[in-house]
Length: 442
Image 1 (cartoon, rainbow, N blue to C red):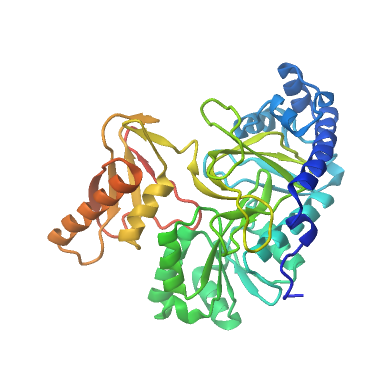
Image 2 (image 1 turned 180 degrees about the vertical axis):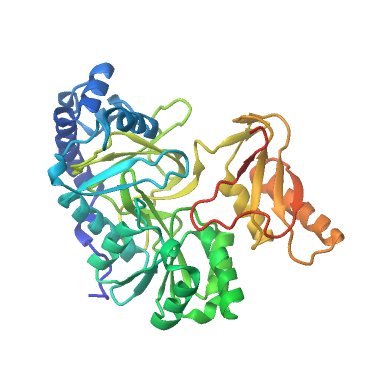
C-alpha cells in the first residue's frame, strides 16, 4: 500500500473536463440544498436576485454573492448555536469545532458523520501528497478544544493508519511532552513554521540535545506559509524533510500539500471544494491560469452541516497550472499573504509573510514586528520593522546586518524599511499563528 503514488488516484488525476462535469452537478445540488435549508442563504440569494435554478454552468457561480467570515459570525451571534447557515438538523451533527479565533471571535463549524468522513478523506489525500505514510508516528501538540488542528488532524491521521499521540501542550506540559518524544520517537514533526523555532530552543535548553537528534523524519508544517529560507533553516535544525500543508477550518481542515517535485501546494480537495480567484479590491474574477495572483474563494460541495458558498478566505495566492511530474492534475499555489493583512507602503503592496521571509533569510532565529504608526492600509513613509538582535552581535555587526536587511527588502519587496533592533526574546514565540503587526496607535 505504501508504494502507491496517490491516496485516491481517480480524483487526484481527474481530467479538467471530467472535474467540471462533477463540479457542475455538485454545485447545483449544494445551492438547492442551502436555499431550502438555510434562512441566511435564502435571504442572501434573494437580495442578490439569484436562485439555484440560475446556475447552469460553472461560470454561473460568479453570479452568486460572496460570503465573509464576519457575516457568518454575525448570524451565529443573532441566531445562536451554528448560525443561520446551519443546514443539517442538530441530531445529525456529531461534532462542533471552530476557527482559531486569531483574527476575532471564533467561528463555529458543525460536522455531520458524512462531513467528518469527507474531512478524513481530504486529510489522507493531502497527507499522502506530502509524504506521510501509515507507518509514521505523529505527536500532536495542538489544543484539543475547538481548534481543528487538534481533534480533526488526529482523526484524519488515524483514519489513514498513522499512529497518533495526542499531547496538547496546554495540558500535557512541556516536560512531559518532551519525555513522550524521547520515549515514543515520533517521525512526524507537526507544527507551524513559527513554532519550530520555539520548540528547537526548548529542546536545546531542556534536553541539552540538538533537535536533529530526536529522530523526526518529516515536517508536517501548517497554519502559515513556509518560505524557502525558513524551509532550509528548519530542515537543517531538525534533520527532516519539511513540507508545507494548507487547510482552513471554515471550509476544509485539509486542502493542499507540497509533493516536493514542483513549486507550490497541490490542491487536493477536488469534489469537495470549488476554488475561485478574485481581485480583493474589485471583487472581479481572476482567471485560474499560470502565474495568476488573487484572493482565494471556496464553495463547499457535498457539505451537510455548515456549507459555505463563495467564501472569502482572505488568502492571497499565486497559481501554477503547469503539469507536475507527480502526475496530480490539480492546480498548485503558494500563499503570498492575507488580503486583510496587506498594507501599502508608498503604493507598494506589502505582506508580513514576505517581510518575515526576507528577514529570516538573514537572521534565521530572530522574530520581527512591523510597526504601524496609524490605521492602514496605506502608509506614505517607509515603515519601521523591529527585529530581535542576534545574540552577542556588536553595534558594528548590527549596523552591517541592518544594511543587508534593508537592501534585501528593497530588492525583493520594493520598499526600504527602517530597522530598529530590540533585545533577543523581546517577542513572544507563538506556538500557533503570529500577528506580525505592532499597532503603535492603539
